Image 1 (cartoon, rainbow, N blue to C red):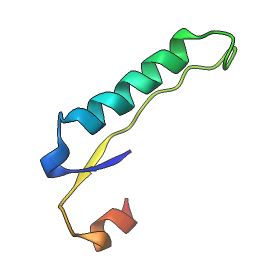
Image 2 (cartoon, rainbow, N blue to C red; image 1 turned 180 degrees about the vertical axis):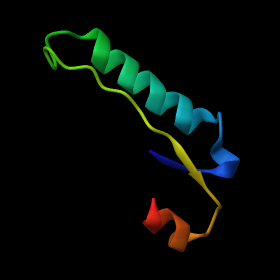
Image 3 (cartoon, helix red, strand yellow; image 1 turned 180 degrees about the horizontal axis):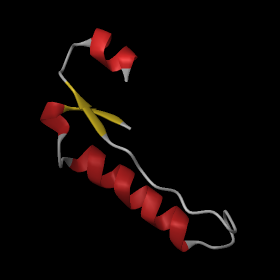
Image 4 (tube, rainbow, N blue to C red; image 1 turned 30 degrees about the vertical axis):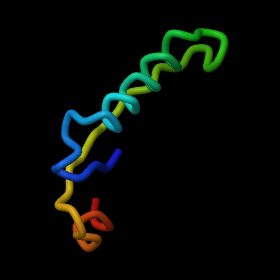
Length: 53
């Protein structure tokens, strides 16, 4: 996931992490699968670096 540096540990990031947690807890949703997240931070208004990630 890409978040701006200003969003670090913010509500959007926490909601994303919680969604992954809930999906992993529901064994019927994606059996034999565990999702992991890879969070990257990019400067706000810097689409060049965001596109490279």
